[in-house]
Image 1 (tube, rainbow, N blue to C red):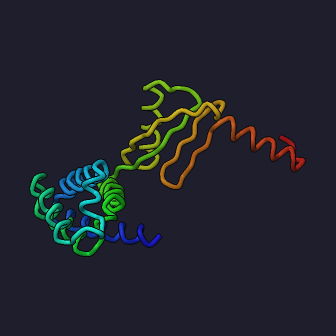
Image 2: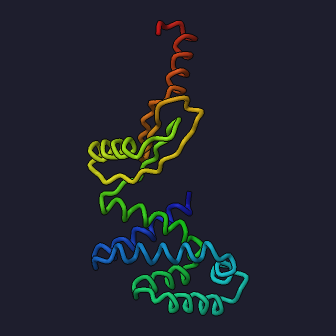
Image 3: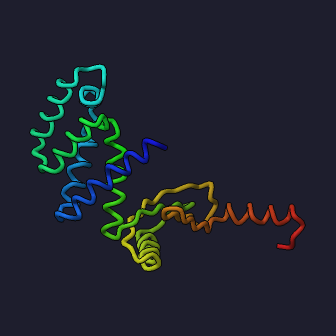
Length: 183
């Protein structure tokens, strides 16, 4: 829990800077790129984040990466600041929070759509459009299949779950019958 609070705090700080200077999207791309690079290169992650290595050596590796990627001054300073505060190990979590906050700022929401069978692109677009109209935000859908649903769909936007699956309806019916209610 503490790690998430730390990540959220640093992500918000960078977002505030981005809002002030109008470079929110630049910082999004740069932070995402660095986080992805470090996560995909385990040796680089070790060289930058492992406290068993010399601090100055780790700092040199980080500054070399920053120079090689030609990052903006703010992103470069932010990464060095994270390193100096001993928070560079939280970079992936900070990036995740920053991406979410930047999406919220742009009015974009991510939703998942799980269906029992493959949906046509027209059906997916209709659902995306309906969700967009309902929320007032641009919706990015992550579409998946789960044959265990039997039929119907389950959609989740943040904490809101819209479950129209046959599986859930059957489970609800079973519970009603157990309680002696008429269906």
